[in-house]
Amino acid sequence: MQIAGAADSRDRNSEFAARETYSREQLVAILNDTVREATEVIGGLTPDRLRASLRISGEQVATLQHLVTVATHFAEHVGQILYIAKLRLGPAYRVISQ
Image (cartoon, rainbow, N blue to C red; front, side, top):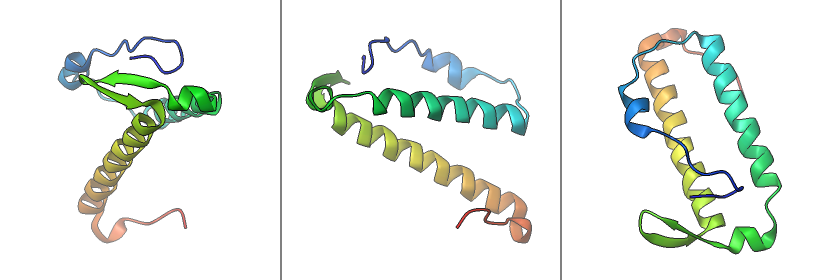
C-alpha cells in the first residue's frame, strides 16, 4: 500500500516478536518522529489523492477513509497505554494536558 509514494516496508511479525526495551525518552522520540512524518505526508496530500482508491486487505477504500481508520486505530492504542498507566500508577497517575 502506498499513500505518499513509499511502499509499506513493515515486518509486522518481527515487530510483535521483538523483545527489546526502550527508555521513556527513546519511546517519546520514536513516537514524535512518527507523528511528525505522518503529519508531513498527510499535509501534502491533494484533494484528488485523498479521494484516490487504495486496496487494503483486499478491499478498495478511499485514501481519506483509510487515514480515518488509521487515526482511530492509533487513538485506541493511546487509550490502552493510558489505561495501563492508570492501573500501574494508581493515585499517582496525573493528567498532564487539558
